[in-house]
Length: 180
View 1 (cartoon, one colour):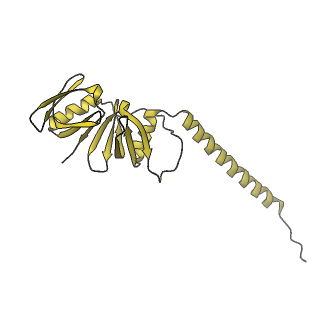
View 2: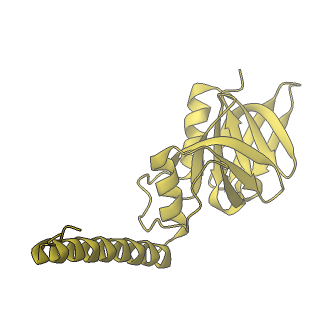
View 3: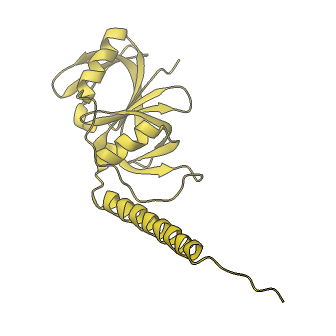
């Protein structure tokens, strides 16, 4: 039987490589844990918008919108819906966000502030200027029409039947536009 000589420097190199890999994995776990501890709602929304991950926004009234977040503003999020519409949702109307089943499970980790300094009301004024047909969610029944006025805390719509509907902005759960 032949005697095999093992170079001690190779054993040291293998041990050092193993130790470095172990330290690297531990550091990644520590960073992930720290990111989860510092997570904020807005930061998490920003991360989801940046990643363009498929998701479903569940509203407090139980309705859902499927798509991906395009942006996070001061008081609302902007969702590009799967059906091609754009949905504005006040932050207070979001009950939960459901990520796609393919998403890797992990804790929320965003801690950044929002990049847009627009309010929902300012976005609604923009809709007034383009005369877009919108569906404004108030409870479980959306009101469809054209925005004809946006005050400090009130939205006025002209409906297809020729009527006018006045909605307090605090009652709005979502605004869908790009219907046709």
